[in-house]
Image (cartoon, rainbow, N blue to C red; front, side, top):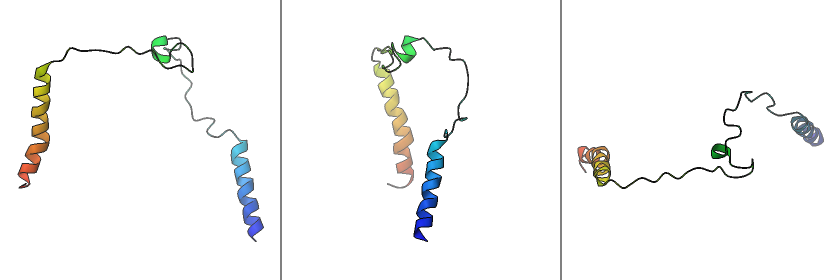
Length: 82
């Protein structure tokens, strides 16, 4: 009885690995960035060559972020009585 179960599992595993699993689970479409080094890099195995955007620090953005954090997090804890 036990050998039949093992044989059944082995046959199912063999059939699952023998076929192309999810062969049709893809989309055929034109890649507009096919040869773009910025997106894909110089070689298919290489990392993409992305530019690093550097922005000048603006202190008003930090003040605004603090006000948003206070509004989102501090007021909700104060409303609960903490």
